[in-house]
Image 1: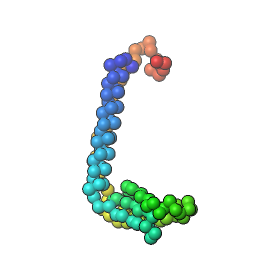
Image 2: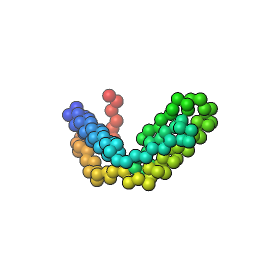
Image 3: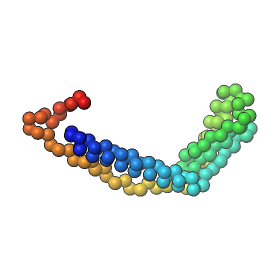
Length: 123
């Protein structure tokens, strides 16, 4: 590949990254604006937020949680997450993703006849 082709390929890749970032921002904004469910453990040491589809968006630990042993805290977190996921799963489904356009990459030039097609160059 020559320099203009490499530059075109890099521009194409950057555009794909920017498009994905914009889509992620759109999805996150949709989640933030939609209903979330909040689950607080019985001892009030763990709070879990889950959005539509049961997607966990945040886990909060109260200062009291640090006084628990690791096994108890793990069980409390797991129970709260499971409950939040189940409750979030009952909410409206997450925002629909737009139909993605097919990926069209820039066409590469056909190699010269004296250059094998599968030649690898160390740069």
